[in-house]
Image (cartoon, rainbow, N blue to C red):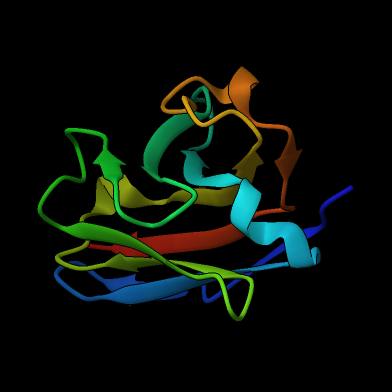
Length: 124
């Protein structure tokens, strides 16, 4: 069992930045690919980014590519999402997720564990 706790959400103006953090409970954090997803009101949950177990590979949705950066610090059992040049359409609840599968990318069903989410609101 892995518990994930997100933090760092909040209210920011368009063009601003936020850094989300996700703390994982297990010391075997390194066996998991980690992803970020988001869900806006009235919309389905969508994939944002994924980082491989080693941290050497990262993948992004086209909508955030060039603006968001996913990273991990396995020594601290942490994964981060640096969000720059935020837009009102980035407003959503952001979820951290852990996947045992090394092939996990944008499919949410590949992820075994989920955090409770953190709200990000971008004002225009």
